[in-house]
Image 1 (cartoon, rainbow, N blue to C red):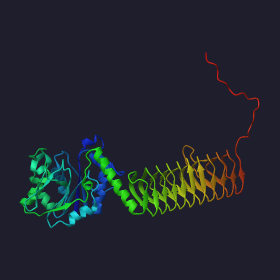
Image 2: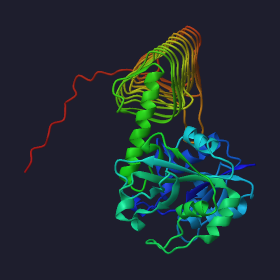
Image 3: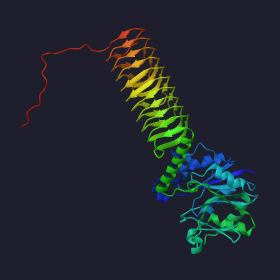
Image 4: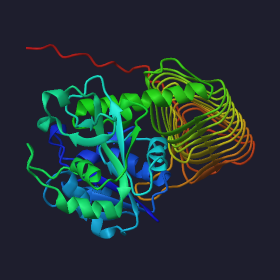
Amino acid sequence: MTLDVVILAAGQGSRMRSKLPKVLHKIAGKSMLMHVLEVAAQIGADNTHIVIGHGADIVKENIANHTVKWSLQAEQKGTGHAVAQALPAIENDAQVIILYGDVPLISAETLSTLLDDKAANALSLLTVKLADPNGYGRIIRDSEDQVVAIVEQKDASAQQLAVNEVNTGIMATSASNLKRWLPLLKSNNAQGEYYLTDIVAMAVADNIPIDVCHASHPMEVQGANNRLQLQQLERFYQQQAAIALMASGATLADATRIDIRGVLQTGEDVYIDVNCVFEGEVSLGDGVRIGPNCHIINSKVSRHCEVKSNSVIEGAVLAESCTIGPFARLRPGTVLARGVKIGNFVETKKANIGIDSKVSHLSYIGDAEIGRDVNIGAGTITCNYDGVNKFKTQIADGVFIGSNTALVAPVAVGKGATVGAGSTITGNIAEGELAVARAKQRNISSWKRPVKKPQD
């Protein structure tokens, strides 16, 4: 028996007021549809089917790297009609769970419970109780508290509208049940659509057991139909991520002012100040301190490093006890050894910088191999690009580079060499040499400062 997941993703989402298909709007830097695809993988789906309609080509392009089976719902005729489009690709003996591309925070734990609690050949429903059930289909139970129907709000009586247990739309049953029930759906309702929820009454008529599982939190089954709901889901996701971080040993200056758009791993005694954003795969070692307004992307920051305010780190690896910023930018390919200092308004790219070296102020270091105990003065740049090709700068251990130096690559500076301030270095410097490459100073005593011409 296989587990087939059907994800409904055909809706236009007109209330988003966007050219982008609704399911591609993002939560925590990842499309809602991608969140659902990942949870399908977590519950062990053998096959994943995505029902697409509006913006079908764009949806396909955005998840091209995932193995899925596509079904097209050319006309939007309701959820029952949407699921029917996927059925021909599903074996009769499969178990089917139906998910929604705009319900991104459903958890694998809840879905596993939904599947595990299901009796053989049963219809299993995921429901939730809401203080305000407005807009949701109501779960109707009989005198023995058994589910007998789901009634959509527009078709509900006043008594039914008072029910606060509502349908989430997520359900599981056998493919054979769905293939028997879906062709029998009628569209004689307020919406003129084929409701998937009508199969509940069919299950009752067929004496099929109906099992109910409750969502652990209302936000887990919240859909995003507009940008307000999208933002609410984002904040709930970030709140849960912040709680998990603090449980793992991180201190957050303000748990409401952190954004994690990927996976953030932290060691013990990590401190994260306000308004920091983490994207992709980021790890912070024990005792790391992150100042306010920092942005860290796909990087490893080892123990006891400090990243000062307003710094950006992307695709970089920092060994222990490095100091970064404030206002520093480490670009992809930056590798810092132990104790390196990168100061304010310094940018690095494809730079391998050795133990205890310093680039403290207003410099650009790109395509460079720098040894240990090197001091690079303010305003130094590696001129690595001639407009067509990139070239490397090599600086050996113990070199001192004076301020406002231009190192025109390819160039190598030998161990213990010194470069005078204001130099433009175009040739190699041997070990221990002093290089000074600047125009001779001239002082002109008879020079007159220009004055402003009087206006007419």
